Image 1: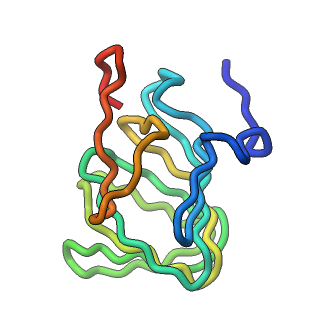
Image 2 (image 1 turned 135 degrees about the vertical axis):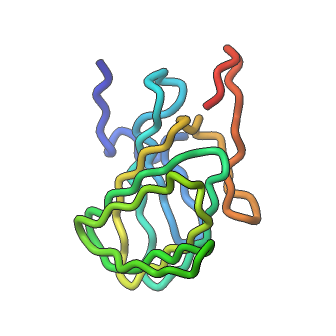
Length: 134
């Protein structure tokens, strides 16, 4: 059993931030459960482009308002509390935060916590030392 709080993650290597966003990685690949689980906040008034070529991501919006733009077909979706989106086709997408967004995210395969978005918003697929892709 694993029990963690976001308070104990704050300020550790599991607390990762970049311009306009912050991700608290609660469960990572090293936990060996087959997925990773994050609490992510995106600052109001920011726009972020992502493309998870190597991961499927499910996102549940807990608070805030914004929009999701599918860059593959230019379809835009409103986001508000209770919205969920699943990037099961590795869609290129853009998130616009009108207010601060707080979301819970699940990645499969799990991220390790060492990934950094490249210039296209992509996380690399990192292979763990035991040979498992995460």
